[in-house]
Image (cartoon, rainbow over all chains, first blue to last red; front, side, top):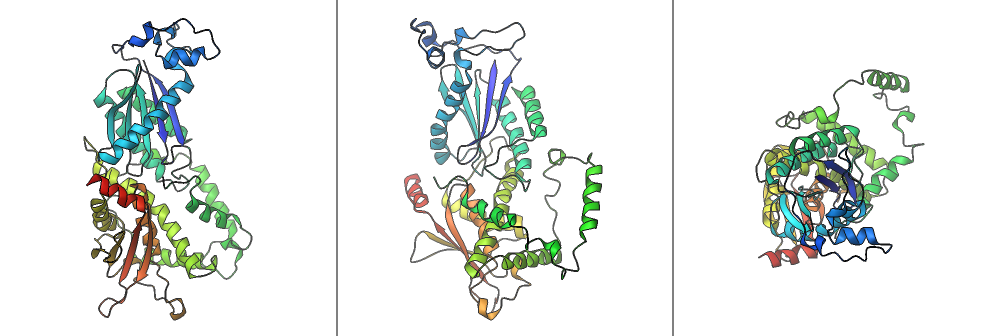
Length: 178
Length: 241
């Protein structure tokens, strides 16, 4: 089971992204679309089409636990899902005064949870299972790390986060909560 | 939305700091208080040697929560900021804009840190989305975080519904500043205006914020921070009603 985290600036530029393979077992939700997929997957766009229709069955897990590209795991499809969910997030953040929006959007097997900081940074997390509390705690830790990053005078709301310490810390929280 | 990329404010500071030939403070021999170039190098070397100092991610954010900065140290620093800025601008408007830009950089950080300190341990952290609560937040919490006291007044303009005013009878940053007669329209509180603008911008209430002297006999330093909200904000407020 994998998680994808994106930190987006107020102008929607990705500043940081992380892919995390969780070792915790969670019941997978099967997509009804996947089984009805027609067999015209021979065109040039086969990968994308398969992914968009939610055919997670094409994903192949190797023995090492690493995931081969294909199915819903394609990088560009993940990015597209994350970007598409921004519309819903921006709608909701106008109406509700929350920071943590749990399971705000769904796309095939992916659920999208988001966290909006006061200064309008958006943390978007794509996940497969349901883990509301864990994700909240994860977001809170990422927020703390982000606040520390933002205090740095060399950091602005539009510069990418490249610190290796930040990366390690986020990975540790991901391992702990996701 | 109101965010353009790259942010127009950010470019102002960076371009002025890049032209270095006559701007570098180390070149002016009249500044006796500055350490010589040699001692600066020595200091840099000693920092490098002690590279095992904790990085920013190891420091707790709440440690400096109640900490206060000495008023005289701040007055000295701010006086230097104004002098530094004044040398690099071509008029009062420009000077106010530069101070505003510097304040903006502080405001973005104040906002994020202030919220983290109040909501960081909460189970359901909250943001602000209504105009009035945002304005009172600026008037009390932001002022308390930055100046250690709440502002003295929050008013709505009678003639323009998109204008709000935050009034400070004795702004701490102007306590030791006396503006010359020929600069009469200058208000160094433009720095504060920048902080306010950043906070409003961050909470997606884009506005143009300016500072004005509105002295009266009782309070000679009385300053009004004028907030002119963008049209989109008022339209959104109408919808949320």
